[in-house]
Length: 262
Image: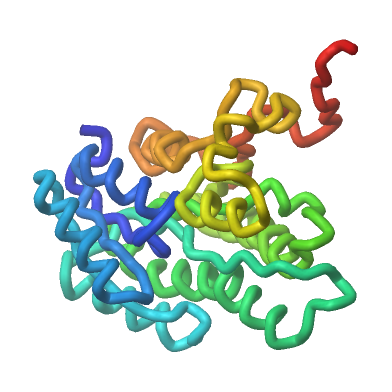
């Protein structure tokens, strides 16, 4: 088991990528702390993990509230006695371009996607020091590099997350605290499935994604992200720090979309 006995908090772990990571981490021996805003759903995920033989705690809270991260970290320590890993996965996907994005939408997006990871890592720092080091994995997006025009605030928040990752990775590496980030590409989650159907695509749209966007024939799954995360949170990657890695099927720099011959 690659994460045996490590206590790992995964924010936004009641659905999608976060849930996928929580379940895989537990199978790899971690004591996972599930986080969400809906108590019934969060409890169900934690109970499912326990039923499958894993260990799972639970914390609740809206990360748009700046008081919540410290309270959550306190609860993790009360429940588990320590923390070894923090995965900042929770995020809001805000639609809207530069012209139409209002202050409220921009502020909430920054609060959840950027301020909360900062506050959570800051709250975890003294506890990492007590155990001689720690792991932070920030879940970003390929949109961090400029983003889609209709995801202005979201893209800005993920760009800021990259600098946060590199800054604190550099500052605390000598203390054994590693901070890395995934910039994730298009991933098939239940929320993404519902969103695309709402936008007019048929229920079987994942089976018909163009190879321009999915050269392998399918888009990423939460499990794809989870297994990469296992490596970054395990001792196998002990010397990797300050890395921002794209989890995508093509390079972000100099990308030339493959097109079928006419």
